[in-house]
Amino acid sequence: MKTPISIIADALVRERQRSGLSLTEVARRAGIAKSTLSQLEAGLGNPGIETLWSLCVTLNIPFSRLMEPEPCRMQVIRRGEGPSVTADLADYQAALLAACPPGARRDIYLLEVQPGSDRLSQPHSPNTIEHIIVAKGRALVGPVDAAVELEVGDYITYPGDEPHIFRALEADTLALLVMEHS
Image (cartoon, rainbow, N blue to C red):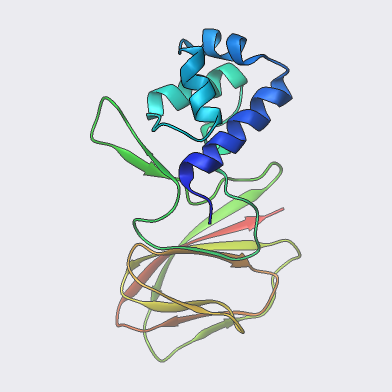
């Protein structure tokens, strides 16, 4: 698995090249030293949100694009894992779980589930993706043939256009479900 800084480094190089701007020009417009940008593109350093935000404005990209992990069909992020950045000027940390792809629509649901009543879902529309974060309790979630046990704060994404399950493993399990439709 790639580290957060290596994901950011790859994205910075990709987006700077896409923009057609030189390293020197991006650094100048972002108000950072050329050596700082060079180190970030090399996967070195520990950039703060302010520096990354300035680079995003300069490159005209959403902040989430810097932290997009490599695409995969199923992903689990345990609480405390996943790409995150911290602010230099505040006690604030943001962890990107998923960026919305172009042309997608998302619906958000709060799930309240009790043990003993599995939710077996048949495939939804083609290209539907489900994202779930457990807020309380524990649950078995995901494709029927590859479901994963999740605890509070864990995140999973998987294809919603395959048979999938949500099984509460504790009473009063709460989860946030985001359905993404293309």
